[in-house]
Each structure stands twice: as structure tokens, then as C-alpha cells.
Image (cartoon, rainbow, N blue to C red; front, top):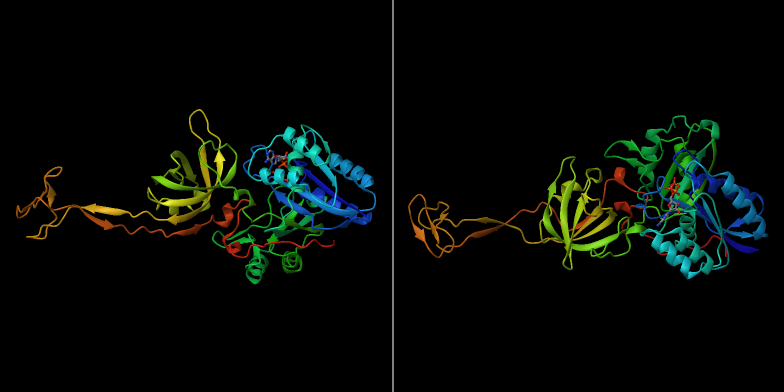
Length: 433
Ligand code: ATP
């Protein structure tokens, strides 16, 4: 048996198709023809700030033991070509690596693809250096995502998603999902599943709304728990099938690199440790804007209303030390680059005070300043006090140090939900060796 890694991306477009569905179909075909999957199919989300992504910037990788790698390469290349929306916006790339190990240059490329913008040319260079065979269609940008998925070992924190697929004749029809069953399943499996139901807004989160073939996707901490969703949710619709992906969803993988404000690039992601340099102000639409400073460089930061964090951000004061997970919004001729905040961790609260005039020692009324360095006089009893000073009264801040994460409705695929903090995984055992 030979070990073969197969990865592909950019098979879909806004006009249709779905990369995970193609992975499901290809994996079924390969299993039928005798290949063994040595890992769950991987669903890897890459930098969510890439402007040309279709939806969630997801790519897939299958790690296999096969008898005849050449035949598998031919089969998958053809399946990707025929199963992609080429001509209506998809630019697929499909990559193959025959090796027991994933070369370090691929792993590095993958780590960068989580948080930076990479060119197809760079992908081609890395593919050649790592002896990856590849095919591209359209403009071939899909090669970047393919290598990003192939190089992602997911040997640290990871999650699982069961994705159930619709029969082709049902695509486009409304999905019927029993809300009460979703609520019960969520409660019964907490904290081992996440983002199934938004209790704050009474919304089912597992089912998409578009014409794509995904019926629903259930996310959680183990293959067993997401696998239990099908009997628990008991969909009425006859399905085409389902698969369980292992994934970096819900891990904040895109925010792992520490960024410096000076020279920060548009569309990148990461986290920044910085000082609040201007008090956040609320804007129309409920968003909050402020500036942050790091090593003498300043940048604007924005917390958008749907995250549910804008109210908290307005309680920050200049001088507070924070860490923020961010995506960098491109600057325009009118506006500079902006740090779009994805999480807020308040590390240190600066002392904040109300500054009051001193109280008259004779009658107890608050005094008036006589001018700079000229002391104070009481308006009521006319008592003068040249040595009196302003009084600093500590302000009730209404915010505590700690981590603030967005509400689940505003989560990106990679956003780590609050319930996952503290239960991150440290490793993974392959299914067979
Ligand atoms: P879906 O989530 O529905 O599968 P998508 O959002 O993944 O769709 P794609 O159609 O795959 O969208 O388009 C994303 C494109 O961006 C792909 O061509 C992919 O190779 C490319 N890409 C992914 N990450 C990066 C990156 N870090 N730098 C440059 N290009 C990237």
C-alpha cells in the first residue's frame, strides 16, 4: 500500500457546487475502489479575510492508503475537473503527495495560508520543492488552498463536523429541520457540540439557506458526538449521505500569529497586544471605533455591532492594555487600514478617575478654581484656600479584565466559541498507521 495525500479547493462558485460535497463523493468512490482513509477527511478553513473567497474559504484533504497511486491521481483529477464550477467562477487546484510524511515546507505554507495572502506562484514553488504533483483549472488559484489543506496536520487542537448532503433533486427546496430537536440535542451534548443553536436569537445555526447540497452540518469535539446528531435530529428528508470531517473550525487557528501594527498588511489575520490610545466611541449602527498604540505606531480598530462586543468596547479607556484578535481591513483613498476586532481580551485596566474640585472646609460646598495655580474659593462663604487641590475619584469602569468573544450568530468558521476555551485538544492519533 502507498500513502497518498489528495487535496483540492476552489471547486465551487456563487453559481453552485460545494467543495466538501465533492470530497464526500470522491472519498466514497475511493473507498469503494479499495482505498483506506488513514485520517478523517480534513476540512481546513484558511484565512477568512481573502477577498476572492466564495464563502468560508474551506479546502479539503484526504489522506489515504492506496494500491495504485497513479490510478487514484487520474480518477481524482477527472472528478475535480468534472465536479467543479469551472467557467462560472471556480478556479480549482488539485494536489497529490505520495509520501509517509508531510514535508515541512508544506506545513509552513499551510500555517501562512491561515493568516496571510499567498500567490499561486508561491504555491507552485512550494509544490515543486515538496514533490507535490498538481493540476489547475481556470486561473488555478485553488492550488493555494489545496496546499494549505494538505500541509495542515491538525496535530494540535481540532474539531469535527458531520455534514449531511441532500439528494440533487432536493437542492434549492427549503430545508426542514426540527427546531425543538436541535435545541434538545444542543443541550444534551453541551459542551461537546457547538454553534448548533443560538439561544440569544432563537436561531437554528446548523442548516445553510442557499441552493448548495449541504442539508446540515453539526460541529463538535469528537466524531462520536457529531455522529450522534443524525439519529437525534432525525431529518425527514431522504439524504444522499453524510461524512464526518476533522477540522480546524472553532480553533482560532487564523489568529495564532502575533502581529506588529507597524507595517501590517491588508487582509492578514492574527492577534495584537496593544494599548488603547483613544477612548472608543459608539458610531451609527452600534459599532465602536477607537485607536490602539504599539511601540509608537497607532492604528484604528473597529468592533462591529453584530459581534455583540461593541458595548463592551465602549467601556474601554485610553491606557487600557488589551489583546485583540483581528483581521486587517484594506485601506482606501478615504480611510486608512483598520483592525477589525474578532475577540477582545482585556489584560490591564488603566486607573480612570473623575476629577472634582475640592470641598470647602468651612461650609462643605464644592469650591471654584481661582485660576491656574491660584487656589480655590467657596462661592457660598467666600472662604479662600490657596493650598487646596483637585480630588481624583476612581471611576466605576463597568468592565473587568478577561476575555470577550463574539456572539455565536457572528462567528466565522474559525472563531473559537467561549465553551471551547480550556478543552482544546493537544494531539491526534491517526486512524491506522
Ligand atoms: P467554500 O467555503 O464554499 O468551499 P470558499 O470560500 O472556500 O468556498 P473558494 O471558492 O475555495 O471559496 O475560493 C477561495 C480561493 O482563495 C481559493 O482559490 C483558494 O486557493 C484561495 N485562497 C485560500 N487561502 C488563501 C490565501 N491565504 N492566500 C491566497 N489565496 C488563498
